[in-house]
Length: 330
Image 1 (cartoon, rainbow, N blue to C red):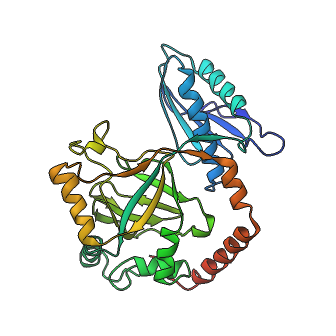
Image 2 (cartoon, helix red, strand yellow):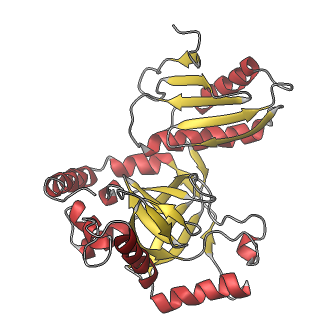
């Protein structure tokens, strides 16, 4: 083994599969990465376990632990080496792992956030037109002036069926990264698991509030930024640096990891009016629809193991595979 190997410890998987192999890696001075399993897949059960771990870490008040956050199946810890050693931190984390145990009976706080969306709106359409005009005139992912119909084709769906998939499930906010407040979301209903390749090359401009899909994730662009996901439409503000609106009083981010997002369709006029109330006036006339709640993992496991759900997931996977044989990749 190389002396530069960052792996400092490994916990083997538990019998029965309730705990995957856990790999501990040094990630720099005062940083520790913990990876769960070695399969490069997105599995919500892996992510749910991380939220249960973070819930217990918060209650322990570990001295010297500055902050921590999750990915889809990884945790990153930042600690103060002058207050806690790496070995001591490992001991705390392993204790939490034992406390969590199996995931079937786990539950954790999870808010339901309802967000309006406009599909193929004029603002994202203008951003796509800019891309075609300035970067790639022959982009195969631009169909009828937008990425929406292309994404439908890539998934073996009609545009109306794609809309039903997006609106037909709650989207679990797994983690936030890439951009301030950015949201990586996976569908709680696996029958709605759409996917799409990324732009090639990337865009130089994406409007605030854009909802896009890349790989298996839906993502909300919180501010104007570059980007590479296929654009589906636009939702309301989820980030406000000025913190003018009451919803952003405590922090500039509306959403947080473990939220469940439920999209519902609205008109572009109504969407633009919400932007005006939130950003220009900071007016409490617009109230964000957020409900506190608890997510129970057993309910999710029972749902995805239903025979009708498994059958429909398999059929959707077949449709996607057939479609992707003929749909061009950017």
